[in-house]
Length: 192
Image (cartoon, rainbow, N blue to C red; front, side, top):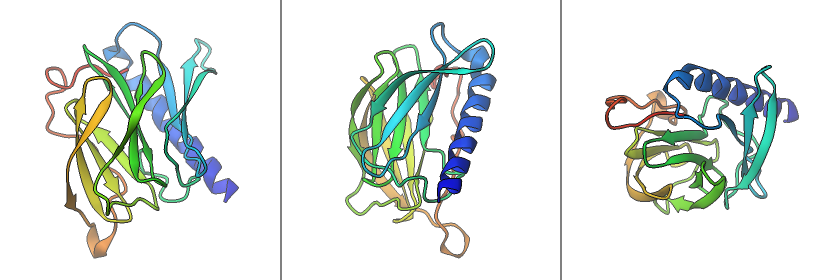
């Protein structure tokens, strides 16, 4: 179990670093963070690290999400952090698979903005993946096999719109998603 959790953390860290490096040319001025979903089942949190010039990390803040995780149980490919950086706000959205909600965090203040539920039937025992296109955030709930749509509001808040059923081949759950169909340079803003 500990080995699986370490593997999950290593994969998430590598993905986050690769994403930050790839998007660095689009970034706004200010600190750049590596953001982890700590996925704790008792009280979940996100940790923010700055990337130092020599490639090492310095922990800046640990922000409680207000929800619970699943201790790394589930598919390691599930993206559990989604970052939005626009001209009006910079947000991190963290999935809380244990409590089946999404937490909003203001990157400017490193404070939680709330937890946002989807349908009462949504569950994510194997993780909840999150992705956004600048206007909407999508969450894949592995237990209920649904994809929830949230509208991204000011103040890094979310408004649940609706769910759709989504099963893979042979009834499998959606483990990973990517946002497509977005005019990134025009409507989705910049990334941190």
